Length: 343
Length: 155
Ligand SMILES: Cc1cc2nc3c(=O)[nH]c(=O)nc-3n(C[C@H](O)[C@H](O)[C@H](O)COP(=O)(O)OP(=O)(O)OC[C@H]3O[C@@H](n4cnc5c(N)ncnc54)[C@H](O)[C@@H]3O)c2cc1C
Ligand code: SF4
Image 1 (cartoon, each protein chain N blue to C red):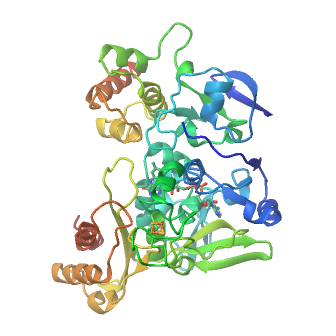
Image 2: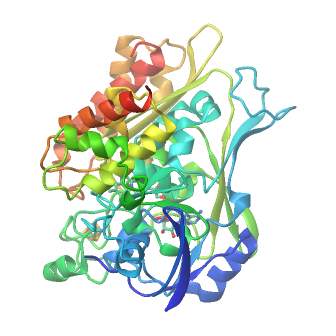
Image 3: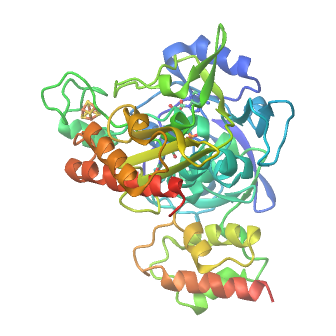
């Protein structure tokens, strides 16, 4: 039996009310959406906020639609006008995202990533907002208080050593959410609402290399929506390595997205790898290898090898880091082959 | 203590709970509905699965306040009176339960699946039950039972 620490539960109905509650209670308050990350973490005493601000009554943070361009459409029709974007309310569940025709059509990697998170009940509960704001994970951190006490705690919570690097003064816990790599590959923009108004931030700029707190979100800010540009000719794919394909967190995750020209050659291509370090990593040098090609096998090989050279996982998850690294080119190849059209 | 009002298996129920109770704790210790099981108690195992507004969710990590105003269905509410639900019946006939600890959660995931998709393929059944761990049966007899129940429901 794992008991929750005591807290007061607030149920605001607007973004402004929610932000005001977070601002009023400061460090003592946290937002909660599906609760699938926060509840287990609170049971482990990783967080003990005195106030939980539930976002689930904020209807303005729900809905998936295609907006902009010169018309609004709810279906995923191929003829979306330029300048359109897919707008996803932060409270949308991963199950709904994975099944939504417009998401599957315009941002296949995002739909695939959402559909590969955890297991079915958790996808019915967990939201895209909570997924983007997910706490980092580490073998020495996601444990009960009793377990962590026996080990002497660690830098990220209650202690002063890192059991992964042993010497380092920096936490290297792993970013472990599935959708962010896909969102970054799709140039998604996040909207954060805070006490002084709303701001937009590229998903690519949202994460920082600090395992203790790996996002630029301030404590009293709420992620209200995710916007993904609708780009004609853009295709994407997502692959995830995990122990049990039924429920587990990623040991390695990889999203690729490419814009294809009319002649089916690559105009630009992006690869994003995550679940290795504290933030998703946008791979460099891919355009130089693949632009102008049709992702022929030798090009795919070049991209996969380039990805492997940029990834050096640490032992932050209790699965052999060398194996996780060795799987980078394997998963890159698989995702790229899907892009090239031969699965 | 605060009063929480829930609609469980068609009944309006209310009871006093500490503000930090989960839905599972409220069902088991507030309302005496001990069918839903407290397994890992942190979202891994699926033994606490109940159906809320038609969807299978994990009650051990659901703050009880999130269930207010919604339709909660637990294993106790699957039968109609003395008439077992076909899924329950087929679990019995197919030997799909051994120790039985995971069974209430698996029954709820199965019923939520069949309510939405009355003719699932075996692959869809496996996917729908992926979040329910069973350490006894090896799952095959469970899939057989859900398949048989689906066949029975669609005739
Ligand atoms: C057994 C198990 C397996 C899992 N496997 C995976 C997996 O494979 N991949 C994966 O990605 N995740 C996994 N998860 C984690 C989790 O279920 C998902 O990441 C889910 O999307 C989290 O969303 P949520 O709405 O439940 O978040 P919550 O738990 O409600 O919140 C998570 C964090 O984000 C903050 N937050 C939530 N919403 C907002 C918002 N709108 N604005 C600002 N802050 C916010 C909360 O304060 C909290 O810190 C797993 C969880 C469990 C228990
Ligand atoms: S990486 Fe080190 S400091 Fe961070 S959670 Fe793991 S053990 Fe703790």
